[in-house]
Length: 156
Image (cartoon, rainbow, N blue to C red; front, top):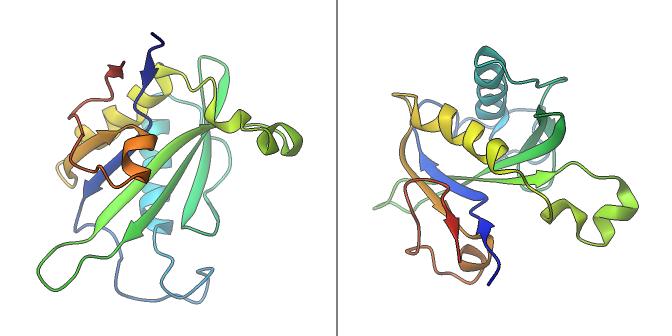
């Protein structure tokens, strides 16, 4: 049986903008620029290589970083809650790949556990972040959000 790593993380935080639309956002409610910048800065502080600045994408924002010489991409966006529930930040790791390789699913393959742990280290080490939950992308996409773990442990 093959072992994979949980690469999708959800968390809650009141430290980042989720209410004030900004002109530079892809759509006025595509939040995440400040959390992506914060994550990039925190990775740099911890000694990880994170060249460049976060950039916009359909769902939210992304940034690239390198761990053990391997480039990864972290995508982050916000899912609002309703009047009874706080919203949720959703992020996932991908491998940085070229356009053609990405068409064939290469972004989902070869994600290094050390890269996942780098993101986990930043999130779990901050007093501004709470309820850090790691999910398999398959479970999360199918609506099984309750099958999370507090660490990005390997799963069967």
